[in-house]
Image (cartoon, rainbow, N blue to C red; front, side):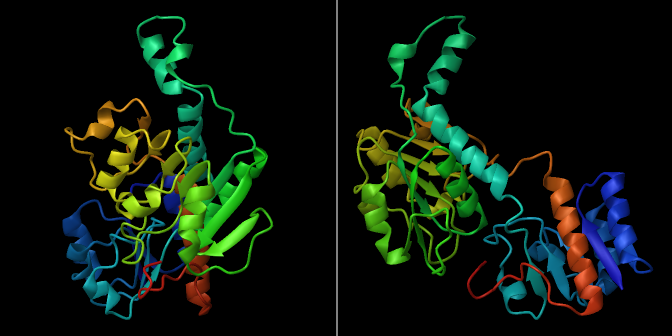
Length: 315
């Protein structure tokens, strides 16, 4: 059996894969040409297997993606094949949730304005931003998977009331006060002091957050997106921000990335932008390789793999 690992990894993590694979062949291609050459008889692939690579892997049985979101992975050839696709869902929840709360606190505590003052060596600037406590907020979390649950845990640390909507989950975690079906999204939007997006991007969730439900938000409420940009109708969000119909937005993702240099989001005082950075963590490489190695063991034993993606659902 041959395993192709298409990722930049430290030697320690490479060795971890080799030790797990035992007598099986593990290849770490240094170029796409080598990847294509070695891919002819590869059975397992680790990394981002884009469409151009996939067509050169005729004997592939299983792809382990290093990503949690599958919106860029489910092209028609892969969806229609028998290749098993597993993802990294649940591995990045901690630091993605951290980013969500960093953006929220940056907005509510005026960090953006104070940083600008620091750049100019000005002591002050408190009058430029309201200083808001988030303790006691009602938070609305859209999606109650791994990331949503980590958001809820952090929210409880701030003594928040946690609302959530989810299209598939019906069992309410203890850390959530109310779990509602997705058709209750308008109720969540109208009741929340902060709305955080934690659902995957699928055909069903594209522009899930639109002008209609953004208009339901409180003028004092904040909107945070650390999931995928196209879940939000970005022009509609820009309009409510321009009009001051919500207090602010923290965006780690945008509908098109990188964000167009002419976008008004760059200039807005009530917006904080980070460049799709929520997935970053010093622990990420080790977590993903440990997960992959556990799945390799399962695969060799003929056991069910963890995090098998439902290609029809997109996650």
